[in-house]
Amino acid sequence: MTQQQTIIFDGQKAAQKILEEIKSKVSSKDKKPGLAAILIGDDRPSHIYVKNKEKACQFCDITFHKYFLEENTPQKELLCCIEFLNKDPDIDAIIVQLPLPKQFDVEKVISSIDPKKDVDGFHPQTIKDIMAGKPGINSALVQAIREILKQTEQDLNGKKMILVSNCDIFYNTFVKELEDLMLDIEVIFSDNKKLEQKTKSAEILVSAVGKAKFITRSMVKKDAIVIDVGTSLVGKKFVGDVNFEEVKKIASFITPVPGGVGPMTVAMLLKNVYELSQNN
Image (tube, rainbow, N blue to C red; front, side, top):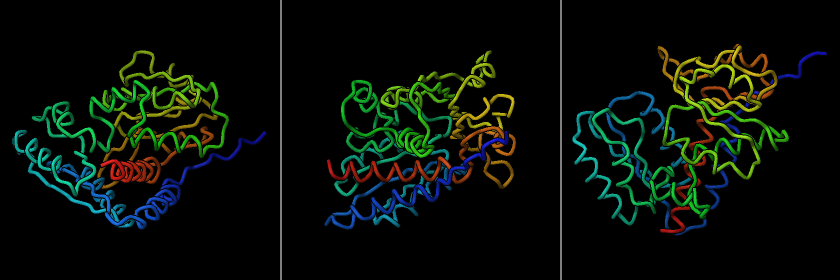
């Protein structure tokens, strides 16, 4: 038997459909939604991510406000900026681009955002509401993963999913937000002593580590669905956590980097912006 051809997910194409739906909704409103993005320091990937969000906002006719702060900006100044945006009636959604420089207290910074403008879904109150099953904003990244899973067109019921992550913020609500898909989900850290044994058991493998080509072919189950969330800049090229050229030979479905999870996350972020604008 010849192996079934691996499906390589086209995140740009799928995201464009979502953005067109958002644009259509925005066009019917008198007041355009407003997104404020705070960018700190010179991290090149962060600058590219914010630029991608700005382009998507321009397409959807969402007003985009960018605030750039130097790497050595005191935390007090960042908190003052957030407080100003919390009170600005033209701003429906606020995002602080992560990661932050080391001198910042990430938890304190995120907690200072008005929960009604928390577009990322990272605020403690937002997380509390998600865990309680209350309606509201869910993580754009988790929504992107959900949509990608739907587009595999596979029966997901009971499938074993392993999420490899180093980010507390991301995985806190991951299981809760995907519970309706009836997956068997386990979250592990990248330094888990049984890492390869665990990943090899996954019918769906999601990696959000941020280490270039960290997931190799030997770590992946044959015919697995592989979703690559991690992004690293190697030279002048972005690569994912997954050794794409190796793993695509055995996966049934795989997301590339760039052009996979990233565009879908931006689209879901703008979906959240629109929803917040309807509530504010």
